[in-house]
Length: 141
View 1 (tube, helix red, strand yellow):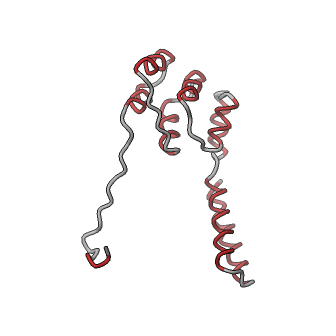
View 2 (cartoon, one colour):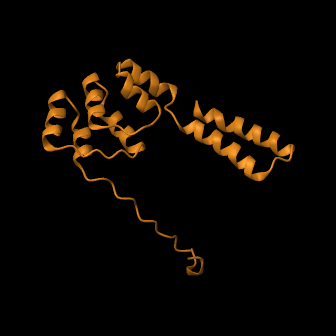
View 3 (cartoon, one colour):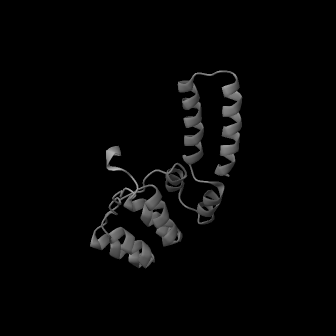
C-alpha cells in the first residue's frame, strides 16, 4: 500500500514543478509525503495485530511505530503474537529492552519463543562500520 505513494508523489512533484514552486517549499512537500508513508504500519500488519486481539494501548503504539516497553512485549506474548514478529518490530523501531533474568523467565513461562528470549537477552546490535570501496580515492575523505 505504501508503494502507491511514490507514483502519486512523482505526479504531484511534476505538476508542482510546472508552476515554478520554490525549491525549499518543494522539498517540504516531498518530505511530508515520504514521512507520512513511513509513519505507520500497513494494512496487513494492522489486520495481523487485530487478529490476535492486541490490547488497544499496545496496538496504538505499534501502529505509530513507537518503542515498546517490557510490559508491552509481555502483553504481545500473552495474546499469542509470534516471537519472530515481535523481534522484527523491535528491530525496525530500534527498541532496546534489556529485561532481568526473572523477567526473561516469566516471558518463557508465558510461552515466548526462544528467538524472542535470545533477542532480548543479547546485547544491542552495534552499527556496522562503513568501509569505503577500493576505488574511492583518499582525496575524497
